[in-house]
Every structure is written in structure tokens, then in C-alpha cells.
View 1 (tube, rainbow, N blue to C red):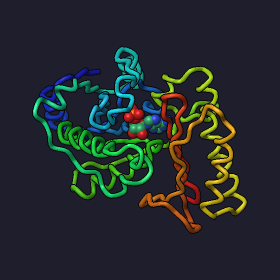
View 2: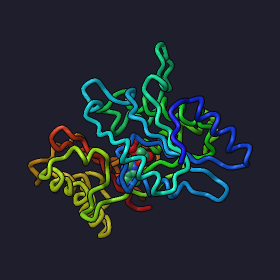
View 3: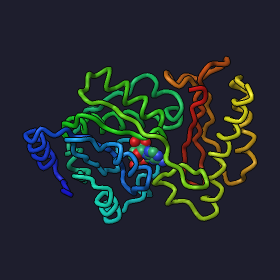
View 4: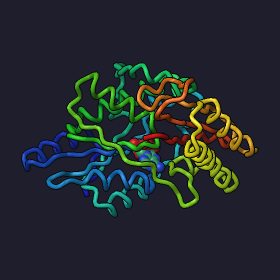
Length: 281
Ligand code: AMP
């Protein structure tokens, strides 16, 4: 497994893989890897292809009051996991390599960035779009895999790739969960034991909503109420938002629909977790 730290090394790697007629599939991450990331890497494998994982905690997607400094980092553990899964190359740039002094161009995220996480994390998706565009351009990847756990991010990147004619196929993988239902997340490492136990409430609330849906409940307000009821039963949970939204455009739903996205963001102490489910699809 190659460890690449500079843009020049990545470009040289891509030249070599092109000469060998190999496709390149990228898995962009912020590190502190877990089984969810590894499942995306597995999905990235294709005959005659190489899998590259990037590990970069991207400062431009964090707000000034957010957890950039507290974001978990574990380079040695990450490299061991990438090796174990048969990753071909890992790109581990420094902040200075990605944003040299004076770099100031930014990609503006599409309109759907204003919903869900966009309401409480202004500018977040511009940072995501900027780094993802840079990674696509500098790696020259043919495809990239993103997780459905970050549902809005995936939808935004799909639209950005379309809008900007980026020559990259955007693929997605399902949410990987711990046995107790908690969606895997690097930020789970920052939870206390008590908060980690309490975090089950997110997937439990979504299971409640699915049960409602299965018996015919469609009214967005009723689904929201079900989720709220369960989350309110947990004293550790501080709700950032509960949204019932259109799974394609992400706008809030007010009338019953054939398919619906339920998306949650909830704080446990300082740690903000997200989860979602799509019903009816
Ligand atoms: P992150 O390192 O959190 O920025 O995530 C990197 C990629 O892994 C993103 O595409 C995420 O959506 C994806 N990812 C994170 N957690 C999970 C999970 N539990 N299941 C599936 N994909 C995930």
C-alpha cells in the first residue's frame, strides 16, 4: 500500500495507473476510520481498478465554534485498517498542501445545502464541495464512494458533479451500524460511556418512525412527533433538528408523500451526531 503525502505524488500515481489502464476509485474520509469507511473501500474495488482512500480533516467545512480541534485523529490506526482491507493507496495531505497560503477560491454548494444541516452549519457544504472538487481534480479518479449516513452530503455531491460536469461517477454505500443500532461515526470516539449508551436513541427514534410508516402513517407532522417523543425521553439528547424532507430535493415535506427522508442531528454533550432513514423507497 502506497502512502502519498503530496499532490505531486498523487498525480504521479494517477499517471502510472492510467498507463496500466487501471481505473481509480476514491474513498474520501476525514480519518478515525471505522467499519463504515471500510465497507465503502470494499465497495470501491473493481476488476482492473485501484482503490485510493484520502484522509484529511478539512478545516474549511468546520465553523468557528465547531469541533475541528477535537475531531479524532489516528493516523497509525487508519493506515493499519486501510492495509487490512487491501487499499492500494492512501492520500494523507497536510492542510498546507491542500490550502497553500493565499488559496481563496471556493465552490458554492447547490441550493439544497440550505436545508437540514445547512441551517445550523452555514458554509459547511461550501467547504465540503471545495475539498471534494479538489480531491476529484488532483486524483483524477473515475469514481468516488460516499456513505448514505451523510445523506445530504451525498445528494449535494451528486448534484455538484452534474452541475459542474465533473467526470466522476458518484457511488454510495449504506449506513453501517454497531450491533445496538448506533450509526458508526468517527465522532462516537468522543462520547462518554453514558453518552454512547444514550446515542442509541437516534436509531430507536427512526425505528419508531418506520413502524408508524408500516402501519400507514404518512403525515409528516405525525412522523416528526413520533421521533420527537422518543428523543425527548433521553435526558442526554439535545436536539439540533428533526426534519421530514423530500428525499430528492431535501426540502421540508408538509403533506404526505410516497417517499420521505427523516433526518436527525442531536448533540450528546459537545458531540453532534446525525442519522437518517428513507421510507417508502
Ligand atoms: P467522514 O470520515 O465522517 O467524513 O466520512 C467519510 C465517508 O464515510 C463519507 O462518505 C461518509 O458518509 C461515510 N461514512 C461515515 N460513517 C458511515 C457509516 N456509518 N456508514 C456508511 N458510511 C459512512
